[in-house]
Amino acid sequence: MNQLIDPFDRHITYLRVSVTDHCNYRCHYCRDEDHQTHTRRSEVLSFEEIAKIVRLFAELGVTKVRLTGGEPLLRKDILYLTKMLGEIPGLTDIPLSTNAHLLPTMASQLMDYGINRLNISLDTLNPQRHKDITRGGDLDIVIKGIDKAIEVGMGPIKLNMVVMKGINDDEIEEMVEFAIGRGLDIRFIETMPIGLAGIEAVDRHYSEAEILERIQKRYGNKLIAQKAKQTDGPAKALLIEDTNTRVATISAVSNHFCGTCNRVRMTAKGDLVLCLGQEDSVSLRDAIRSSMTDDEIKALIVSAITKKPEKHVFSSVIDNISNRQMVEIGG
Image 1 (tube, helix red, strand yellow):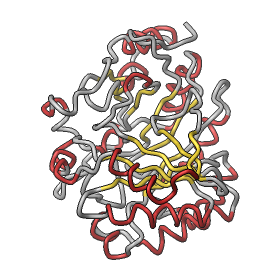
Image 2 (image 1 turned 30 degrees about the vertical axis):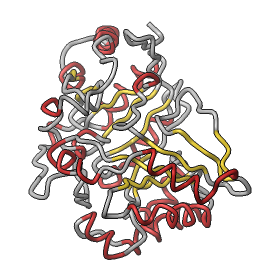
Image 3 (image 1 turned 120 degrees about the vertical axis):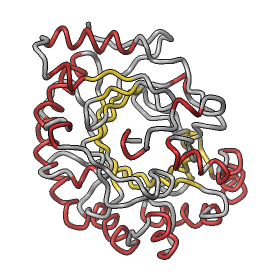
C-alpha cells in the first residue's frame, strides 16, 4: 500500500489537519453567533497522535499536509508539532492557514521551525468591516502579522478572501492591489453552505463568474493562466503580468472542482472527513488509541478512501451539512 486512490481514480496526496477547533475570531460565515466550543482536551489528538497519523498517510503517498483550525496558532506549543512533521519522510510541503492575529509574535519562530508557506484569511481592508465580519477582530494587528511574515522571508503567502454580496464584494479590486503591493497571491472564495452559518450566507453568495468578470475588466490581457501542480488545492490561478501576484478563485458552489479533488481532512478530534459536502467520516483517533497495528490503521484509511464521494451536493442536500460548523471541520 503506497498510494491512496479513490473509486473515481483520484490520487489523494493532500491532507488538511485541524489542530484545534478553537478560534480567536468568530467570522459569521464560519460559525453561528451563539456557537461555543466545548471540546475536552481528552477528545483532541495529541501532537504525537497527529504525527503518527500523518506518518501513516505519508507512507500511503500523501506529500502535502496543511495545518488548519480553528486558528492553529492558538494550539499551545504548535512549533513542537511543526518540528515533528518536518521529520516525517515523504512530506514535501507543510503550509499553515491562519487569520494572522498571532503572526506578529510568531512568524519568525514558524519560519525557524519549517513553516514557510501561509494562507491568510483577509476578507476586507476596512477596519470596521473587519471587526464586523470577524465579530471583534483587529485589522491593524492582522496587517502587522502579514508584514511580519513577509519580513522574515515567508513565501509564497496567499490571502484568502471570502466574497459576500453586499458585504465586501466592492473590495475585490482593492484587495488585488493590496496583494500586488506586497507581492502576495490572492484567492477569492465563494461562500459555502456548511453549517447553519454557511446556509444563512447563501443569500450573500457571489459567484466565480462575477468575480472573474471584475478581474478581467480591471487587468484584461495582463492575466496569464497558470498550470496547477498535482498537490495544489482547487484554486484556478492567473498571474498578473509584471507582478509577483497570482489571482485565483475557489468556486465550490457555482463551478465545483470535485473531478480533480486530491484531499481529505482530519478534524482536531481525529475524524477523517472525506468531503466537505458529506457527513461520512471515520474516527482515526479511536483507531490509534486501540490495539490496532500500523498496517491495520493504514488499511482502515485505504478503506475509508473508497467511500469518498464523487462530488458534493451543496445545491440539493443541505441536510447533510447543516449540523456542522466550518470552524470544527478545518475548512
